[in-house]
Amino acid sequence: QNQNIPWENLKAKKPYSLKAISDKEKLLGREVILDELIENFQNDEMDSFILFGQRRVGKTSIVKSLRNWFEKLIGTNIIMAYVDCTNVRDSDVTKSLSQLGKAICAALLTGSQKKAFNNYSAITALKQINIPEFENSLTPLTTFLQELINIIPNYKFIIAIDEFDELQYEVYKPGDISDTLFRNLRGLNNNFSNLGLILIGSEKMPKIYNWHGEQLNNWKNRAVDTFDRERQYEAFKKL
Image 1: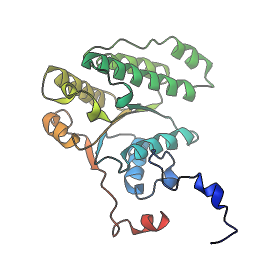
Image 2: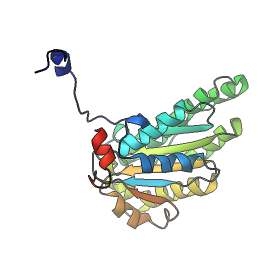
Image 3: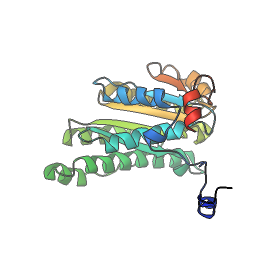
Image 4: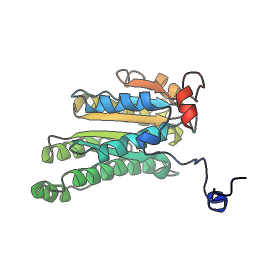
């Protein structure tokens, strides 16, 4: 055993972490899809995406690395809101949707204030915006987003909703609540050229897409698969 290696110190370190990665340089094997997302949201015309796959294949790491990339990119005009549905789910579906809507608005508002920190008039106006009340839909998000755009018109927005299929079944099974929700998402996607959305989920997402494909027909689906040694050999070597 090499005595020059600090074995005692290394015992306290975990060689592999189960936590999501938020650094693009450490996100091995997912460069293609991450670069596609970066390029898409930097374009004048942005597409919206659905990311799906098994658990622990890197979906959340991709989205968090995307957010971190734009936060660190000097001079970018992109504001990204990330919400994990496991943090907003309530036993009551109405409360879950309410908390989801409020969490999206809060993340958008915080991101806007960070980007406009050196614009006194914009910061003053942003402080006057109130987060609306939500019930069984995301309808108030349209008015809220328009308020932001009126104050900072030259910015683009990304809304990433992670663990979407961890919300109650009523949110996405065919019915009045899900029909309204997915019409809301379609309206946001179609009516705001400076907005892109990402829905992230696991094995239930293909079924959700089949149910609501009419509302999501112009979104791009991307499956995040497990690693393949042949296709991603260079990433395996780095690991």
